[in-house]
Amino acid sequence: MERQQRRIYITQLLKQRSVDITEKQSALLEAYIDSEEVIEQCRLISVTTDTLVMNLQENIALSNIREKLLQLPNGTVDKPYTQTFSLTQYGLEKIASFTLQFPESLGINYDQQTGQISGVPLEQGEFRVRMFFKLTNQSDPEKTHEKEIAFVVNPDPKKLWRNIPSSADSIYWKPDEVKELTTMLGHKLAVASKRGRSHAHEGIFRDDDFEYFFDEQTGYALIAVADGAGSAQFSRKGSQLACEAVVNYFKQIPAEEYKQLDDVITAYHAQKDEASKNALNEFLTQRFSKAPFEAHQQIAAFAAELAKNSGKEVKLKEFATTILFVLLRKFDFGYSVMSFSVGDGGMGIYRRGEEVMMLGTPDGGEFAGQTRFLTMPEIFADTSFYKRIGFRIVQDFTAIVVMSDGITDPKFQTDANLARIEKWDELWDDLGGKNNDGAVVNFSHDNENTAAELLAWMDFWSPGNHDDRTIAILY
Image (tube, rainbow, N blue to C red; front, side):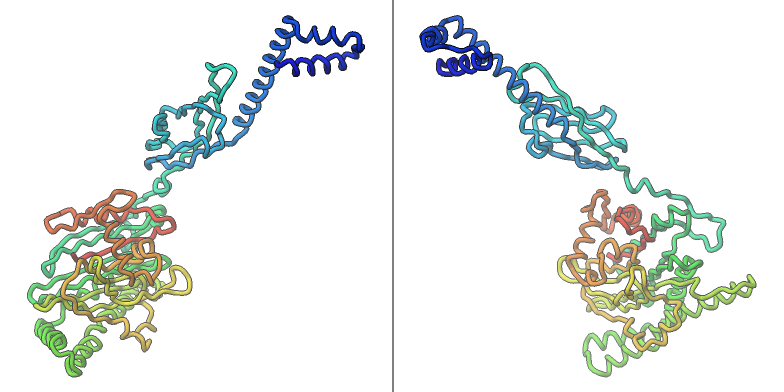
């Protein structure tokens, strides 16, 4: 304490104690202030005062730290967790050093050198992470303080869904998931259909279906995908009947007629004149368009027979289903692709990084899940019916894809996105392993597990999208 500080301190102390110093005693006071004893005592007072202030500041800092509600970003069971822990991020600048201690069984650790919290949480719940720390310039350099930090680990949302097998004894039962791999047109066809989580959770059926065929004699191939309406009692049977009826219809077309179609398509490709265009349109309107109508008729007949045998009213809409199909043929000049669609979902001819040719326009509605169905008689009376038929000629492709809305809704989000090559490239990258699950579908022709990998990939997680999923990929 400097002399002036000593003088002020002692003078104020005397006033507090009501001790008066006369003018004659002022010299005595000045000498007293300069005495070694007073100098030492004032030094001790200064040290004690500093200690008191420092201790108070330390207690205030500790109190502020302990009052802070600290919480780490949430983790998820079985999902890799990485987080940088920064003192400034949490307003803990008064801390000089610290370490974090997680419960041993949790599977999370803190690296003090990198400041990284990392690991894979093994348990769900609310946990307390212990932070051991020391303050800057604290009175006892060896003393360690402790604070708890909240850390919540959420359950894996997938594991909240039950997977109850559908009853094989039920009427119109079919497997909850199916996968197939075959060869057609010099390409591989991988198809997979999987019951959605919403159905698996309740132990009900897969409403989607698919069917295909390839006739080596005529060179024609067909791929069909159908999505039964979840609100319809027998839609699982409706989708199956629709696919089977379309396939059987094209199987029964005589080889001679397919030969005539070959000539029509070849002439159209070469000439593109009015005569060849009219000949192609005639086949599409007179023959191709009859396939969906035949499917409609067969479903209606099946419903009528069920009503007759059961003695109960059975409405056609109980078999409500969409239908999407493509009829394909390989020529020397490329591939002809004829298509038809009723309902949602999507079809496209995809060339990676270059273009996508949409096959048909999904029947979207004003509200989510609203669409059109093959079982609606008005479909065939509508003047726009023939707009559902498409025809393309392409030289080559990366893939021709037919899929139900269980795939298009989570992967494309909107019908408009189905026409964007960027979204198709994202889908192809996703199939190639660019996803949170690390699921990879290997599309090399010597891979015999492509369909199984496709089925596994379809287990992807997408909040709010738990419908049946079906996809057919010709590659």
